[in-house]
Length: 145
Image (tube, rainbow, N blue to C red; front, top):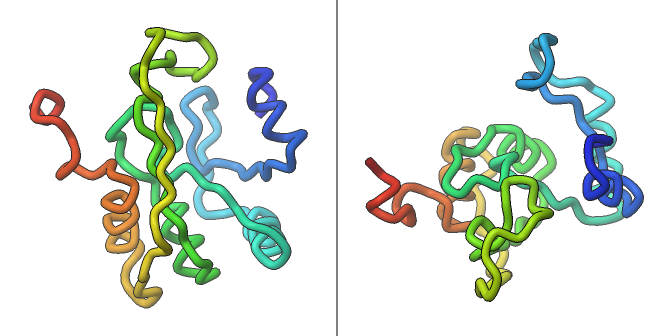
């Protein structure tokens, strides 16, 4: 979270950092979650709200990571899906440099999800990806091949 000014801004605004179990820039591989990360998330949900990016990247239609589903399954929060359209057309991968001017950017807040907290993490992930319009059913045919 200290690699760019944008991530530092997120930290200053109250962003939570959690250790990834895998990081492509590191040789370190960890198994399982750090219990202190789980406590941080619980404390944040007790008093505030938590924004999570289930794909962990700005690349459209990237597969979701199961961490968001596990947070939902364990803590049972109210989940408001947010659809961000036009981001990858307007900005580069870091989200800082403009790729194309005049691109329409929209943010759509959807109604709270009706989640079966007893469902598997994979089922919750699939439901979440449909809700944020990032599942295969929303993927343009050009990208499916």
